[in-house]
Length: 396
Image 1: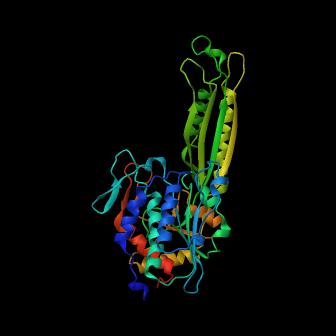
Image 2: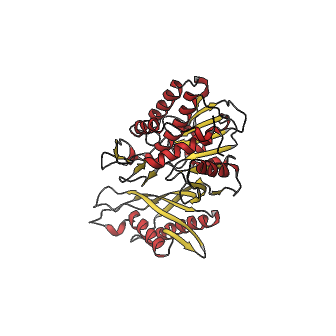
Image 3: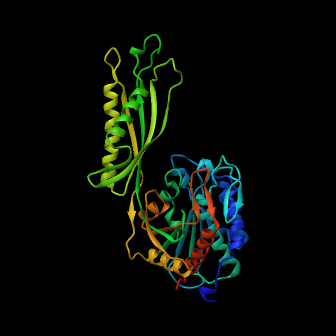
């Protein structure tokens, strides 16, 4: 059968995505999602030995219920193995979502939740593609399906994936984002910092001068970063990146000078060198602030900082086979591809770092991580058509 005649059953795919959206599964709690995927694959005839779970969650600092889910299908035609990827977790705001249809969109029924289309729509695209191939007996090259965990926490599933389970794929396609016409060929790198500030407690009414306020230290440091242009969008000497202080924890009472505060921050840039400059500026700001805040006895606070690279930036070659294949599949599905560089992290960051160049295509998800999130079903259907062409391996 000509590929131009092969079209996915989009009605079934839409039913599948609605079922997936309704399954709870925040980062680290993906087991119900994984179990659902396994039941669907087993019901389509995939033998138990073809479906494996790795131990990525045991290597994550967050623990978790399950590792990545991997399904390998032998090819019925010769060709390089293809990898289709999507992540199972949602942000906390997406847990408990109840999808309802409004016109050609799926939206959350509850205005207090996100939809979770990031990335349940990607899971639906990959899973619907596999089920289509299995149930219709379509010829295809060797395929690997990878459903990752803890993407939203810092790409920990992709970072710690058991590469030996993947079967050495030569072409890799990640489904995550907005329009499938948008071919993401590169993404920024991200670095996280855990900053612990130790001051000295004292009675805030009787002897505040004897205390060293950890909150004051944090405030001075953040104000300095903002004032000197190292917080938010950071542009210096033609280079640019971003930074953000996202979480501050500390204090138990207003009548106590706060002795300890934890600050969680991040820095991003496509340039590893400039990202290192942003990280250095953050570290210096907190150390300087700690030295400035002293009590009546001349004692100062102290700061300890632990940092880690979440993911390195990458840029695929213009002639990378997975990029050319993705563009051809989009054109074959009747759309116009356009290349894109992401300012956020993707599972593709770590897969590419593992030696598996990976292009990312959208699924129709919009306004991710917010209560105004929705799934554009027109784009979702397009993503299903593109994914089927990529999996079958005929895009001309």
